[in-house]
Length: 368
Image (cartoon, rainbow, N blue to C red; front, side, top):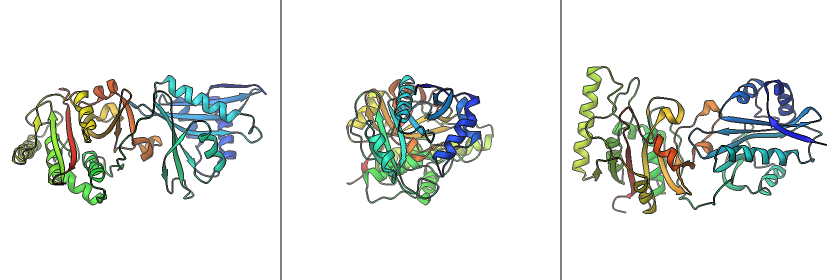
């Protein structure tokens, strides 16, 4: 048997759908999704062709600006198993991810499928987590990853929390930091909204406002975290997209209050653009860093967005992104502990025409 591994084509969709139906009882990729994913620039779909017929496939998804690739699915047609096609497809998926400069390849595998779990562990994957109720039938999944370049580095065990609304990324970052420094704290949706109310600018271009740096620092301090701020601009922020004079006035008043409270709480403020040395130094000192990034560069929306930097690793910063792109098939596992190359991070870690840079450095609860 001679197998050729090649990129999938639109003409392969029927064969891929048949393999999917035969290989999986639930959580199947639909015919429509196969067609879309084959053409998507953030996915690689590879097929194993034997004697002119598609005998298996592997699909890899990529998160924009990330050092992570995800093995979304791998399947071999009935009758073709046991001939090494799965191993060849997995190797091809790893090579594709490596060629895209990804640091790690991650996957989920059904915990009860001992054969599949053993297949990945035998090929250098390590367990990094467990997701209960991951599959449609309620079965649990093991999360695994393989390092494609560099070496593994120890990272702090920072709990991950997905934001529950489009506008509460900042509060989600604060709750993750609080849960890290205070193990008794449990993030919840009510606290998330309360923190947003305490840190929000009130308005944005449309809909509820995002959290601005001074407001986030104040909310962190008033909820038990040590906080200091590095911000490249003074005065009211996030006003460029707001056309209503009344809304601008309200935002200016809210932000003036944040600055007064920062001064009253004696929160240290460095009025300059942060550097990689600032971020890495804070991490080396046992702190976490909430950083403002461009939502447009992260996921295509022109909004300010906050992520939590939890570690540094081999030319990368490792971050928890509270935003999960569910419409692209992501789960929380895709948004947690994402390694991002230093140069990419500094490109996305700014917002607006002026390139605002802001970082809130977070530490253990005050008085602890």
